[in-house]
Image (cartoon, rainbow, N blue to C red):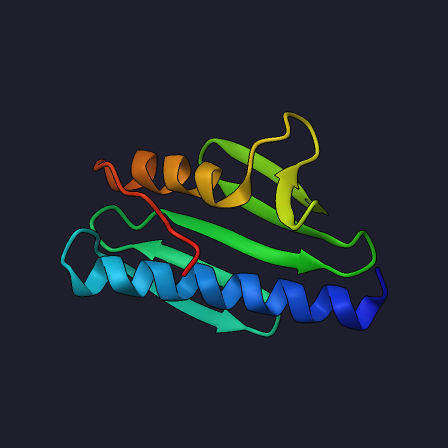
Length: 111
């Protein structure tokens, strides 16, 4: 995949994550604040001040996630962003990470 294709897919994914979190906020299932700066999405949990950071790494063609549980790298495989270590899918993994930091079960859907 070329750099421009990667950047377009990464941007679409960051936007989808932000939109999913906004929907959960609107439904009052979650209280987070999202902010974007270029290729970095910062998710701040209002109740406890913790954060999850999702950003794209063009040189590696990966999305990186930093959360309380650790750091994770995701690469495109078969149209999904898959963890480079355990193969887990990004949105499923983020659902678990967000749930853990929010203290409530939430499911992030891709659109």
